[in-house]
Amino acid sequence: MSNILSDDTIRSLVISYNLLGTREFFVIHHTNCGMEFFTSHPLVPRSIPVYGYIYDVKSGKLIEVEAATKAGAAS
Image (cartoon, rainbow, N blue to C red):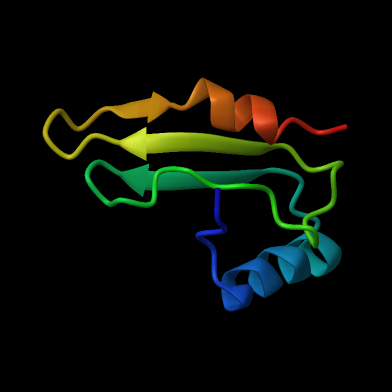
């Protein structure tokens, strides 16, 4: 698997965590984007849960990707 978040995005998330107190991250993709899989980035603290979702553009539903949420579980 490859990272789909840019370094700029990761930097913004880490700054949000350190300066603003963000305690959870949600990663949401849309259907047919070709980037529906991700791995956790080493700069994201393991104490922050990361949830994975896909937005189905046809139905308008937000669908949890259980494997992604499980992989992003805080430790």
